[in-house]
Image 1 (cartoon, protein in one colour):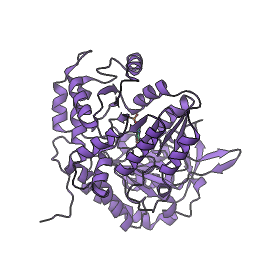
Image 2 (tube, helix red, strand yellow):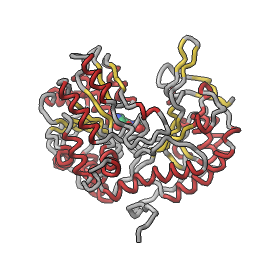
Image 3 (cartoon, rainbow, N blue to C red):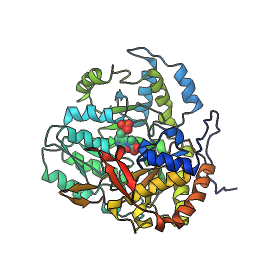
Image 4 (cartoon, rainbow, N blue to C red):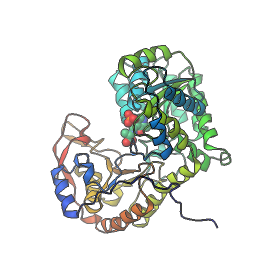
Length: 456
Ligand code: F0G
């Protein structure tokens, strides 16, 4: 029989109690947190969808490998195992461990970027952009136009606009120390990039003599979408597809907190040795010796297995199934989401759900608070709190008002999702009554983490 239900492809060996609070308790917690979910203690969150980063449940195999880790300062066996896995998947011979993705960004960029440098990509993630800008560079987003329309169902909405990329490289000769692509495209909604687009972008970078570096933190999910959606790729293994993707580039930056299936870790991997000596010298200065780079050997052991577990196709089918199930469930209740659902998250379109709340009253923040108040769900506002600006008294809204629900890997079950969806029906029916928020305190930058709000 062909089953319709996509099951969790694991049995559960270790459990943790699910925090449960009453609606009244959550109302008080919200007020105390200044209506900012970053200020709510995790012990008071029932379903934590703030991020898929570092929130993975590890496998029994990973936990047992951690016990046999070799914590030697130099030349540890655990490093050898980690390095062998990274080499087998990426094909890159030079592997430099770091404690997480942004450490890899800072290390690579500080070797390559000087003031005035330009770095194109489909979309840069916040920390990638910030690390480029901090060195005086400019991070340039060249994603295709379809990415800006939440209802456009383009199967590879993370693709870079090849025409714009080529003319951008032409117009800025000598100013581009590296070109990038983020797979999957987190900032653009967790959308994949096709193999065809990756190859074409690589050819453009090559033609212009620009090194090409992948931001590969969700490489396994991206390879899975290539297998599922790209003509001619359906019969290939995701491992082979992933290896093909890495072969197009000169190297990658990796936050292993995503498709590394671990709670901490990252790396840089490179095809050529040109930058390696400089990077290792800097690594010793800021992260640690090149065979541990800011990690414990037990983290390297977990990562050596986790990178392969992320490429398991039953796991990836379930992973895709989670976001599709949540998105379909929300859509049936009249809650619009960015289409198609991404790999690691579902993005609710708060502006479409609550057109009566203007952007300067932060509809996505108001909805994120309501999801917590009613259901104990913690999502993340990606709208005018995060990206809106007031310049000389004039408010400039973000292009979209979204609430991101990002799914920790192997943590919640379908029963959890069904429970949440029951309550969302009520929120959707009463959405026209929800009111916006105003800011009562904001820090000078990155305000979404610490700003405080009051209901209007
Ligand atoms: N690149 C991308 C595409 C990311 O999504 C992240 C982190 C990073 C780099 C930085 O990695 O956190 O290990 O330093 N994204 C998390 C998120 C924080 O919630 O999407 P890091």
